[in-house]
View 1 (cartoon, rainbow, N blue to C red):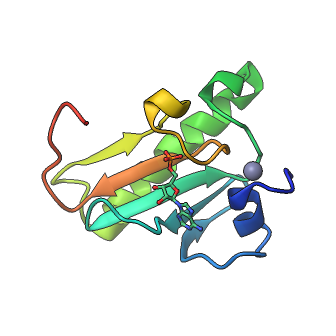
View 2: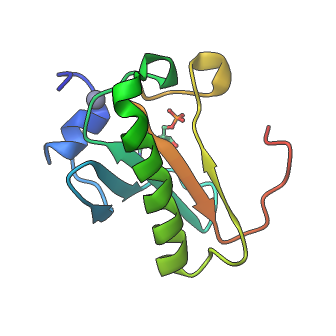
Length: 115
Ligand code: AMP
Ligand code: ZN
């Protein structure tokens, strides 16, 4: 784990968070600053800094994350209406926490393109 990484600290239960799902590979928690009625963060337990740091060894993990996103959207009741899975990479892409994560947004109409 990276000592100063806020998501590693959440995963280690050093910092409280509203965890809605977890398994051996990922944790899903409510975003502190929600941008939609449903705004979850799906965070791998493995500390990966950005999308650019992924390796082929992570391919199965990324597939799993998308499966979890679909399952959560379904279980929370917004799958049929539609939802968005977002990864922000690097500062220009809007990344502010340097531990790979995917935003799952739903519960309202989502405009395109995003800002
Ligand atoms: P990004 O800007 O794509 O790196 O996304 C980081 C997200 O983490 C933002 O939407 C923040 O609101 C969220 N966030 C930051 N700190 C926490 C925290 N302690 N608990 C839950 N969400 C957080
Ligand atoms: Zn981390």
